[in-house]
Length: 436
Image (cartoon, rainbow, N blue to C red; front, side):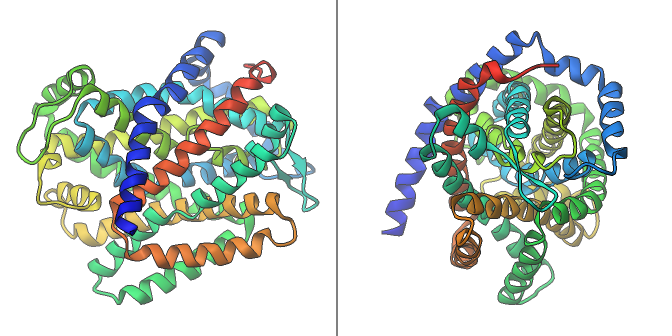
């Protein structure tokens, strides 16, 4: 029964990202780029003025809300995680090298989608009585559709998405196997850490993420760049395969079954959306807690966040491409692929990557769970939080015994449904978004 149900969900996920999800990201992203006259490129070029304006907000001690830069790391903590190291690898192991090209396209289009959802989240947020704010898609969807049906549906999906079962599974597996620990004890310890941090709200999340994310990003980036540069002679051929495979697919080779152009688009866009939380709504909820009263200031940080996310994803994929590990059929789980690719170049890789996996995955899990709690509170102020905590506990434990691929598929599908609802709201409110 379970296998049949998971097979059905896999088919729905494939259909969504092959025939609908791609257009929901690429076409609106192109439209917003044309309408704003390439606003994302202007923001990236004028990064000094953006950070100067936000620094002025940081100095204001009287405003409610959270430091914009701490929220940036809280946002990055949710975006940059095992999705960028492990799950993104499935883009090329299933879609071929060309998937990386479509990931780049989706990321460029997604920059203005992220800008739009955060702009609307801040614009329509409400004070929560705790010297902070509640915002996000639930609030701007109320403005778009003048009712609570779609906002509540969005909040329910965010509650499901907020229990990051795939990364929880990967961390638990990696830590228990690397250090030869009892899996049940690892599971219990990880649950305690997750609940402690997440129940402290966005402020505690921002504090932890601003401490944990920088060392992870620096260490992992340096390791990947070393491997890529060590294999510099194959880089031109790899890039040729990436561009060619984006439009022609990739023939079967070694352990790779082959892919079509449609598969490259499917997995490239789907993994870009998942890793960068494009149109998911997570980022809008987190960044709506900012001190600044100007939506465009906080929204501009989303463009830099998306660039950071895509950079880490690109490093991970290039590592498995330049080393040729992506065609190894003996590696059944995505985490095994990146582990083998890096282990050939660094000593004590199992221990080092376990720490990296933990830092990356933990910040993502607590960020998602924090957003899930806020979404549950939108559904029911009285019972939402407690019911959600009970649901999360059951979900984390029960899905621990499911394989990684199925958990990735569940997150992909629930994320796809969130994209559908949020893009409807963003497009309906497109005239409310200012590109300043």
